[in-house]
Length: 229
Image 1 (cartoon, rainbow, N blue to C red):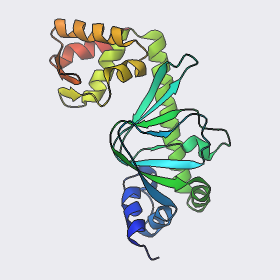
Image 2 (image 1 turned 30 degrees about the vertical axis):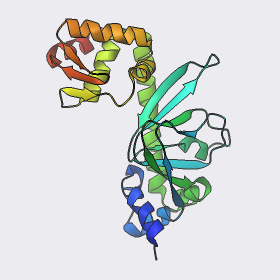
Image 3 (image 1 turned 90 degrees about the vertical axis):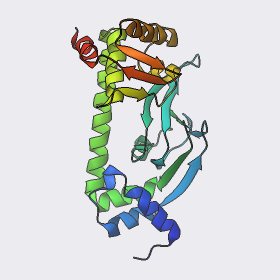
């Protein structure tokens, strides 16, 4: 199979997507042939709730925020999507319009795959479909866990768990989103988030650095908070 410069560029994008990891180079080129590249500036909307779907968006570089708006215009952040992750997948299996909004949080490049042709490739290579289902199952589990946490856990515990997750094995965090977006994702107001961060700082558990920097000063105590009922 021949692949021109544009196709080669899409193939580079596809290589970084876990759902296509099990395909051979030739099979990944087939996927690349049904994709195109699109760039979005910081703050630009990728799609809005109500738009017709039928397209799979794969993040190549950058960061995208998924969110919903209630009747009063209040924003609920669902999750952030980074390189190698995809969005818009539910529209591949339903004729209903998209239900969430996607916005680039920084300059972002995406590979955009044609939905109908992608479904043809899923039929040809079932491994793709199974990996999409596996990813959707993982997201459903995360969503259910978040709903449970918002319903049952204190705001302190939710924030502490989020900080430890963002930090990974490091002790310093640069928030990938605004504090307002983080508060929305954790199911609390920005004022509550600010109070909780200040309280953790006063206890010597964290340090605040600028608008988005957070330093974990006592990981052991933070982990104890996460274990509280």
